[in-house]
Length: 308
Ligand code: MEV
Image (cartoon, rainbow, N blue to C red; front, top):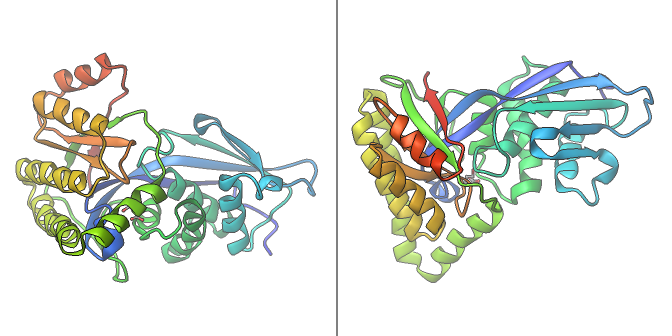
C-alpha cells in the first residue's frame, strides 16, 4: 500500500457530442474533454489514523471514508483508493471545480480519475487511471460504458466504441458550443435503464433507433474532422430527436434546445444521460442573443471552445 498521495491532480469534464446511450449498446460515440475541470489537492492530516476526508464545496461534498457504508461518493472514492493501493487514512483532499455535478458533464468520472492520479501520479499510464476510475464509476452508475472515464482521463476529442481502442479525433477547426445546465439533477443509472426497457419492449424499433444514433455519430465525426459545423449542428438536432424517441430527454431539455435554435444555434441536443443535466448548442458568430436568452431564464450558460 502507498501511504503518500501526490500533492495535486486534475481531470477533465466531458461533453458527449454524439452517441450517448447508444454507446452502452455497442455503437460509437464522440466525446470532448474540458481540461482541468476538477483539481484535487492533498494534504496530510495531523492524525494519520483519521479516515481520508474529501471536500469539494462546489458540489456540496464533505465526507470521510468512515462513511463508505452510507455515502455513495465516499464508497466510490474509497473503492478507487483501495484499487490503487492508496491510503485510506491520514489525508485531506480538497477539490476545486468549474463544472456543476450530476449534470451530464462527467463529475463522477472527473473525481475518480483525479483521485487515481493523486495515488498513481500525474504521469501514470492513462489506462491505469481509466481502470481505477471505472471501479468508482461502477459504484455511481452500475454498468457504465467507460466513455466518461476515457475522456476524463485523456481529454481531447475521442471516438469511443466499447471494447475497441479509443481513437483521438483531430478537429478541422475548433468547435464552439454553449453548454446550458438545466438545473435538474438525474440518475444516470435510471436513464440507462429506460433505454434497456425500450429495447426489451420494442426490440426492432428501439434497436434501430440506437443504430441510427451510432450512424449519426459516424457522420458527425466526419463533419468535425472537416470543420463542417453547420452540418454537425444538423446532426446534433437529429441526435436529440433520436434520444427523445428513446425516452431519455425531458420537456425542459426539449424546450432549451428549441430556445437555442430560435436564437441562431446551428443545432442543439441534450448531452449525457439526459432526463435533466445539460444541453449544448452548436454556435458560430455572435452568441450574445443566445446566451442572454438563457440567462433571462435564470440559467447559467457556459461558452466552451473545443479544440484538439
Ligand atoms: C453517461 O455520461 C453516458 C451514457 O451513455 C452512459 C454510459 O455510456 O455509460 C448515458
